[in-house]
Image (cartoon, rainbow, N blue to C red; front, side, top):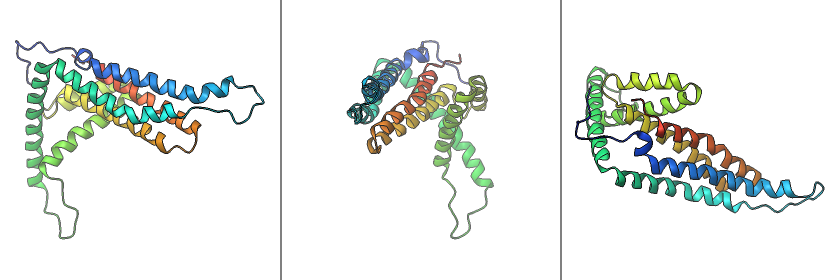
Length: 218
């Protein structure tokens, strides 16, 4: 188990990711407002009116701007907490080396792939895949049972190949990616109602990302 140096007072996760959390919250509001630009005019129109004019452009604008908004927020968080970022990178290098060592040992136990077969992942690929898989698993479980997800995070970090914060950050990325993929579909939606539904469908994933970015198991 590694310990944080006494001279480094790490911020709580909700402070460390404050700009990202704020941007995610802004994105939730933007999704709702964009959907309202579709549903609002229909609700305001007289019951017998046909061919109600709605605005789908706000949905498209949210789709186009979401990733840039979140990337900017992440960069701002890193600039605000350089000491924490440096420590995180040190931790990431340590756990990555540990995962590579495990993958190397596993590789020695595997038989060589027959000619024409699918090659096994490299040691480096295996290490990266383990972290990505852990984040995906935690994000998926958190939707169903947060307490079980917390237990899983602790279990994953127990062996030293993963760190608690590292797993939670990867889970944030998994939730954000799912939400962004839903928003991406807005651009090819066949009609305004579908575009609005896709905007709203992204919201639960963005809310989950806020929860994971705020979660501090310590």
